[in-house]
Image (cartoon, rainbow, N blue to C red):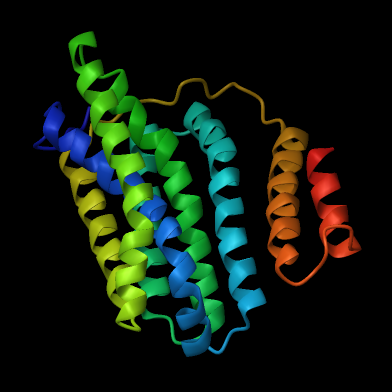
Length: 240
């Protein structure tokens, strides 16, 4: 089985997980004060910006469902590298975007890949070490994940006061690249859980469409009333 030079090193694996999961969560929390600046510079309406953020969150929700299916049928550690490459690509697209479409695509890809990494990156840290490490894993994840969400508005406010948003996105891209490098260094090949597991395409389709409908309806609340068809119908459809 192929292995990286830092395979089995708990600090390296923990850092890989944190770098993979935390940036998008912190970025999402930081975007509220930055949204008007991004929209103005990329010539987007606030509604379009709000919809972009909503679709990125929808992609985050969808990724969790699909990542479990992929982990059953595909080599999980190899998929971890694929997700890492896509996260770096999405982060660079969002940070360097000069057009609204490129920014939206990059940010949605950030949300999707972070969610895919949530399922692919955590198991090596949780099940690959003795129970004595579980306490430290819980501490690291709680402090970093909740800390990033709590720190996000402050970082976003600092960037907004400087009328700049790209530095924050480039920092996120750099952290995503560090996560990819650590994924390579800690790589330990593993087979799929069960290739014979059937695909439930109906369930996957319903999950994906429900996530998109829910976040689309919520995004439209910026300029529509709750009972307007464009908001109420997608939200009801998502619940069903």
